[in-house]
Amino acid sequence: MPESAMWDRIGAVSGILFAVLVVISLQVSLGTGETTAPTDVAGIVAIDYNQRSEDLRFGAFLMAASVFFLLWFLPFLRHRLERAQGGQGQGHGWMPSVAYGAGITAGAMLLIVATLGFAGSHVASFEGDWQVAKTLLVLRWDHLFVLAPPMAALVAATSVVSIRSGALPARLGWISLLLVFAPMFVAPELMTMLFLLWVIVVSVVLLYQTFSEDSGYLH
Image 1 (cartoon, one colour):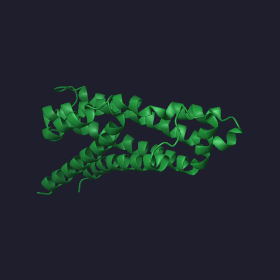
Image 2 (cartoon, rainbow, N blue to C red):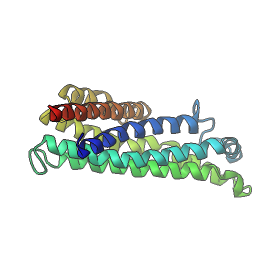
Image 3 (cartoon, helix red, strand yellow):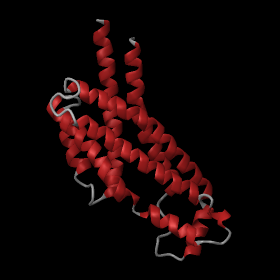
Image 4 (cartoon, rainbow, N blue to C red):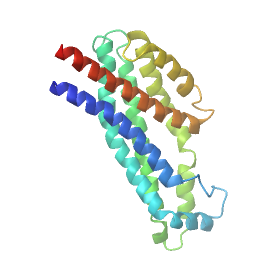
């Protein structure tokens, strides 16, 4: 197996690990959902944070770890998109850069979410200043609306390149635009879950392509 094929597979698997870690992080941090809201009294929010401090810390750690794998997946994805277009500058040459930049932006925002999680796990040490807890909750409350644009841009750019150049199956590109891009501002929670599923599907397809190419190389 060529060394380049091994690294390609690492890049593809990194996308799967990213999505899986984000899902686990959200499950650990939120469980069945938020038990408090920004309209609640600050003391109630602080009590909830104190009770979930360990979960918040572990969830934040998993979220930060997921970004590590995202940073390995995105350059690999851009490489595959550029190669399908015939190299940089060919066709819609800037589209892979849109996908890459959108992914980096989403990763940076996920790190902010992780930071808020780490901060929330230390609410008990704020010595009765419970407004800090409520501030952290308010900052994180609508973060999915802010995450929606970069996630949608990543999906849209990848889908357009796939439809036009065959980097990924064109059918996957059309379905992605319909199921992931469409609910961007209408249902960001749904879009986030669909986005993570999309990353897994794209990673699996790319991983399959690397095995197919390696098989062709051996023959």
